Image (cartoon, rainbow, N blue to C red):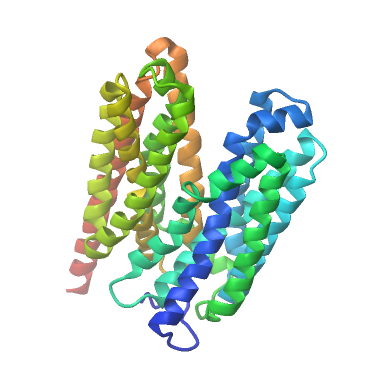
Length: 405
């Protein structure tokens, strides 16, 4: 266990560990459902609040902006909070934001409330990862983090379809009420099943800001923000690519999107296991794998069956998530909370970067399949940052060894 990470007040049994992970995972399930369900309800939202569908899409950007800003700010301000109380507070704010979103009267208020709903996202996952790693048996930190993240990836398979069904039959506002109810359930489960972990000795906002002085923290965040962006460059435009290039019928697209969700769940499970065995090799290996899978989409997109299987593989790229989370914990020193939360800011930046560059390529007349090339180039760039981080770590280790002798 990292000496600067929070420690449980008492040792936990395997059964208590699993209950705690489940409680944290339910919170991740709520956040994942709330983040992704709106993408399938934009026409309903646009019609209800009287704006165009592209304007309604601004609520997605507002949420992402809330994640990017909220993760570092809340992580620093809450540095000396008890972990269980902080997790409960974050999930309560998320629940309130979703209930308020369901009652938003118009475009401006809905955007502001989605921004507010996104604020707890990154800090929740960062702190939940710290708690899971602290409670995990030796050698199983990444798997514990992966189980928490399974709530997020599992939401794409279960939570989002349920919320979308509610939104289509009872109005889009019902979907946000559903998310708020799950978030309140998470508060209850966290209160009951998560041990009361103390922050690290001497934790303070100033010390958390110390993470920003560490080169390896920035390099790891760079891998996430750039290398992981390739997945979003393809997935953001997967529907028009499947229908326009592969000739897939529109009514069959949800089944392919479900394959993407299956890939995310599988990648999260496998990636966390690999990270426990060989952390740095997993990060580098997933970057190479990502480049190959994304480049392949350029060629498989012309056939609906091959394209569908490739979309499943694109989903598995999420395998890098637990590995990067653990790497940040290892290089952040005594500024654990901020570094862990920033990981999710980086992933949301990857979302924005990948979608934007994919759109630039399409607008330039390179065709729908050009997103595969964009994704592969981003993965190669992420691999380059990984090589830089590896070389810097080795150089620092040599200098430390020389100084010691």
